[in-house]
Length: 211
Image 1 (tube, rainbow, N blue to C red):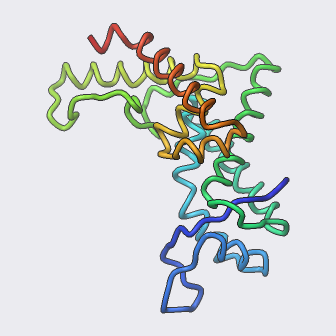
Image 2 (cartoon, helix red, strand yellow; image 1 turned 180 degrees about the vertical axis):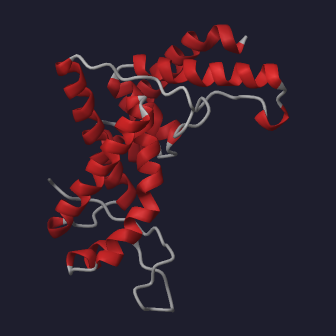
């Protein structure tokens, strides 16, 4: 796998140095030299966000966990050729997107259906769509919120993968337009167009619940 991406994301692991935290790129270099602790720290820093992304892309918690495991296996395999040319997180999302795309293609080829997780684990509220403060909801509002969550994820899965990926990376994961463009290998204008189309489609699907 072609490697790329570096980040200055600091964390708690210092590798014995008390004066500063190691960046993601430095941890990758340490892992390449044989430090398992360095990779464990990278896993701790990024596992949650990878799970979230994979869940939003597949709509299934168990499938998301399986995809996330594959993402970190690919990161480990890429360590010998890794070069920090961009943010590490951008590189990780590039791998995660390719991995989930492979999962979705396999699912389509084998005719498997991805279930919509009714528990709500692993997902956030409808990203990019304003919702009332759920802490003040009563029973009826909570039921409405749960229905909205389920409908949102169903609507998200109906989007073309290219639009869903752009929307999730920007609105769900907080990547800039430029970073999303790097992950998807397209122009910034294409990213903006895909996000706009995704948002319009989601609002149309959820219009009955948001009125």
